[in-house]
Length: 130
Image (cartoon, rainbow, N blue to C red; front, top):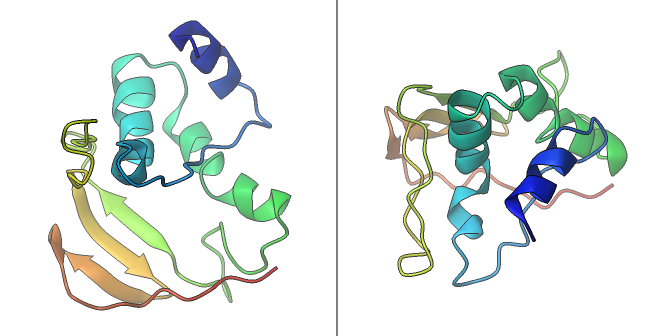
């Protein structure tokens, strides 16, 4: 895949961001932070709001996942608070398990799983069924 193709596709309002999460591939740990750093903040190819929508709300809407993808009363609180100055993917093919940097707080189902950039040890995820 060519970078120009990726950039052109990424700007379409129906294209969602995702990763297959294959073991050994840097996208497993870096897809979304790379999208923010490279395409929102550095290249200014897409807006922050557009990046968030195509990584959350659009995905939930497309796959009919109820009560997720938006910050709305009654929805599950899956929220990431990141530092726009430091958000970045660190994973590479040589070091595919390097965690992204810049994640200050992460809430999964309303439970804080990352606090001040440190994992709390809490496993708050659950299987999501349509």
